Each structure stands twice: as C-alpha cells, then as structure tokens.
Length: 248
Ligand code: ADP
Ligand code: MG
Image 1 (cartoon, rainbow, N blue to C red):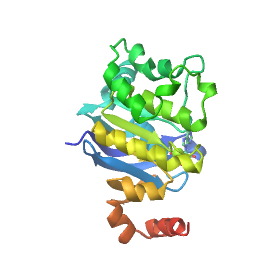
Image 2 (image 1 turned 30 degrees about the horizontal axis):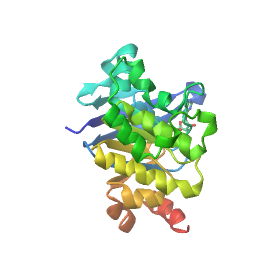
Image 3 (image 1 turned 120 degrees about the vertical axis):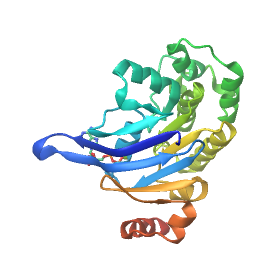
C-alpha cells in the first residue's frame, strides 16, 4: 500500500438548496516519493481534496489512510499532532508569524511539538532555499518570493513524509515561479519526499510531475504520466483544458 490511500471521498458543503458536492467519490493511491500534480478548472474541488488529504477538514463520507493510519478514526487533538508530524502544508498565502524572524518561523512547528531541532537538516533546507542570509529578517522585510520560500522551509522543517501544496506560486511574480518549483523538485528528490501539488503551471506539471491528476466537478476524470496526458488525453474535458493551455 502507498503512503496515501483515499477511498470514495465525498465532501458536501452546506445544506438544502445551498448544498455543494465538492468531492464526488474520489479514490486515489499515492506511492512514497511520488510527485503528483493536481490540475483542473476553478471550483473543480482541488483545494477541497487537498484539505481532506491533509486532515484539515472532515469528510462527509469515505476514508483516508496515511502511513496506514486512518484519519477519520483520530480525535481532533490526535489529528492535529499527527498532521504536524507527518504532513507539511504549503498554502497560497504564506501565513508567516509577523513577530517572529525567519529562523524562528521556520523552526516554529518543531518547537510547538517540543522536539529537538536537527540543525544539520534545517541548515540544508535553508541553503537549498537560499535563505541563509535572511535568517534574522522579519517577514515584512522580505519579498513575496522570499516569504514563500520561508513558508516552504517551515513546512519542510519537521521533515514530513507528505507535503501538500495548494497553488504555492500563484501570488509570485512569474519570473520566480519556475525557480520555486525547481526548488521543490530538488527538495523532493534530495529528501525523498512525497509531494502533491495543486498548480496552474502546466509547464511544471508537464516537465516535473511523475503523475498528473485531472479534476472536474468534484471527480477525478483522468490521470496518468505527463506523457500520457499530453500526448494522448482520453477525456474530452481534459482535451479542452489542455488546448486552452497550449495557446500560451
Ligand atoms: P478548486 O480548489 O478546484 O478551485 P474548491 O475545492 O475550492 O475548488 O471548491 C470546490 C467547490 O466547493 C466549489 O463549488 C466551491 O464553491 C465549494 N466550496 C469550497 N469550499 C467551501 C466552503 N468552505 N463552503 C461552501 N462551499 C465551498
Ligand atoms: Mg483551490
């Protein structure tokens, strides 16, 4: 069994007339060390899927297993600790703590957990991300790209097995995007991490991901290697989606 397994995930928001089925029977399995891109149009359920996989919210029905542990069986407190130790979440907005400097932000999850800081590992993350000259800066003295890199370092700090990224580059200048994505790939390779990334960057999905998952209307409509998806898409909606991107 892979590092992550999801069976028949359903997530319904709201009630009655306002009901939205954001996930409609999604199943998937991800192997350790895989680098997976989730793509699809806005509102197709990508963020909902990521939030569920990361244990940030509860399912309406279905089961998620990470490292063979069923998230739904855990009480809230247990889930919080499990999440902090096993899952790194990188959001669109970096959520840095404004009164802590760069280094303090990076090691915060370790300290929250009362664990010892592995200086050597933290140093390697800081170096890969090019932050060694910025450790005593406060977040408001950093550019958007630098703040995003601090967010990535913080998510990597506890050395999580699974890293989830929700459009991590959408608030960055275009010229920074590929650099950040390249760094993520290096981190994933060097530290053998499993990464699931929601991204609009089709170039990235094409060149870097091991697997691309297409979502539409709360379902996975197609998945495969970049080669399979780009040379021979099976689903009409996937084809149309790709055509839109090929115009760029
Ligand atoms: P994506 O990330 O692919 O843009 P989302 O997962 O954010 O899609 O949203 C999927 C659907 O669920 C959308 O119709 C969205 O409006 C709805 N939705 C997402 N989050 C909530 C929420 N907290 N409450 C109600 N509806 C939501
Ligand atoms: Mg989203």
